[in-house]
Length: 201
Ligand code: ZN
Image 1 (cartoon, rainbow, N blue to C red):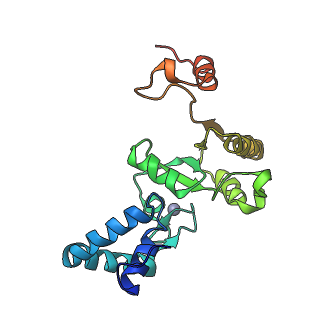
Image 2: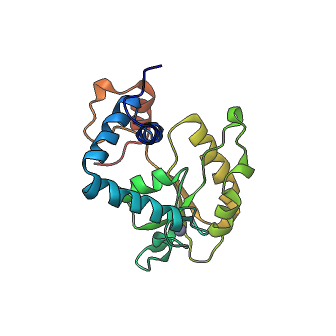
């Protein structure tokens, strides 16, 4: 155990920062030092932003997104296409699709994927809520934007079966060559999927 170089308040700050994803103890120490040096310009606004977020953040009762308003900004945006629901496992996936400006639709956050090994069953995910949304008059298509993993695809099949009687089109993301990707570096599964899902040029 290394000896502390700072008082308990600063050590506590470093320990908390080190719990953030992507920050190990060394980066946390650097981040803490940076915050301390930029006390007025960065540390004070960051502390205030964290407090405000803590006070105001809630989970959208419609789609499961995280926002400071409920229903969330996406659900209340009148310019969104109400006929399409994009199903994602986590809020991080929703935010990634929004960053990419991939689609101007609404979302549904499942809160994970089915995983028998980890004991995650249908009752642990927001699947019932999705099925009832899919029955709404305006909804015509459900896009399953789930991970291309065994759990992601198991979840996609499970949901597709449940949505059968809702009379909506169920689609999923294409699998294949990433933008800027070189064929020689792709794994066999990805290459095979890319050939199977080829499109007219
Ligand atoms: Zn929402």
